[in-house]
Length: 94
Image (cartoon, rainbow, N blue to C red; front, top):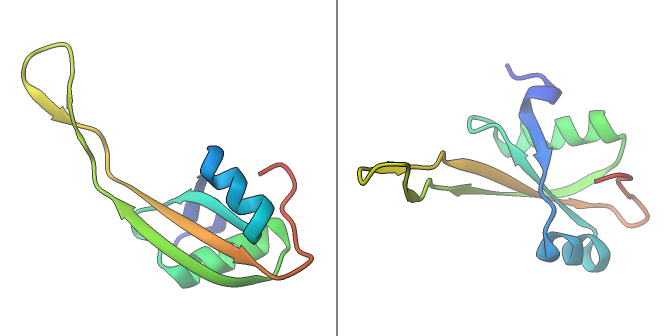
């Protein structure tokens, strides 16, 4: 069983995620590869003390990169979660 601090690795901040925060009240986090929607919901609710309506998860596979040599390598695969909060709820600092 993963602890809430292990489930959520970091918030993802980009132009698209800031737009989702302002318009749709959705926050995006990078989460542990083995975490499911229920674990993500519980982690967000306990860490930030907000009410979560919905959780969408996306697994992003690693892309091919060249690292110092001509031999190809891969960047690590990640998993991100888009969390929709109830009306009036907000996460400060994310």
